[in-house]
Image 1 (spheres, rainbow, N blue to C red):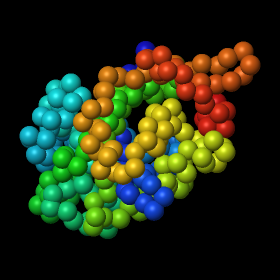
Image 2 (image 1 turned 45 degrees about the vertical axis):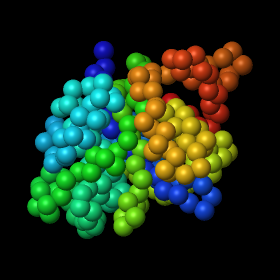
Image 3 (image 1 turned 90 degrees about the horizontal axis):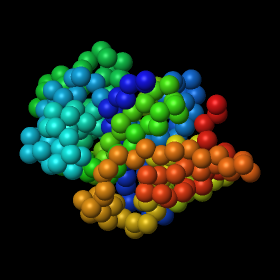
Image 4 (image 1 turned 180 degrees about the vertical axis):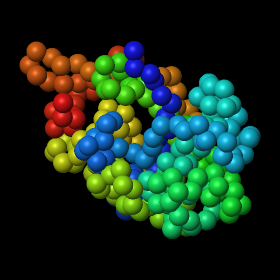
Length: 254
């Protein structure tokens, strides 16, 4: 049985002229997990993520929302902040700081994220990370499985997301509605969690409204089932019985 690894995903948002915009990356096709797919920043939890400087009160809040031990909540918040920095150059810290020049060294392992934070007197701003959902990779759907906790976060006013990570071929801000339209045209491929999340975000008019709604989001694990009907149509079935059609153009190549 494939091991299920803990992971954190950050839905980085900003208000745009055409509604809410999300930062989306298209992963390098050769990557073992979700190669060629367009996703939010994120990745698996590393052991060191639980040791990063984070405000304890906020750790307790996240633990309560995800119904998990404080140690795991601390690691999830740490991973969320680290992956956001590695993949976008954006630091979710207090005080705020621009250390994007050190991003590549952190991604390549030349300096640890923890040492970078402590050396500059920074603490992860866990209050900026709002639990949104939890997705578990179905068994047999991928050689790697993850228990991914999704957070929404607003881009800090003094930060700029950049197309910098070596793990993607393209990264950019996209209006939520525009990203869904591109997916339906086959221009980008979305995994079920990304598709479902973008569809939910389309109902909100501002990032503030999304963050307010995050407090009421159900966080039970979602493990979708892929359905292929006799006529060749493809859909995912969620645990609550919802069926979400997926155009074949959105699916990863097998």
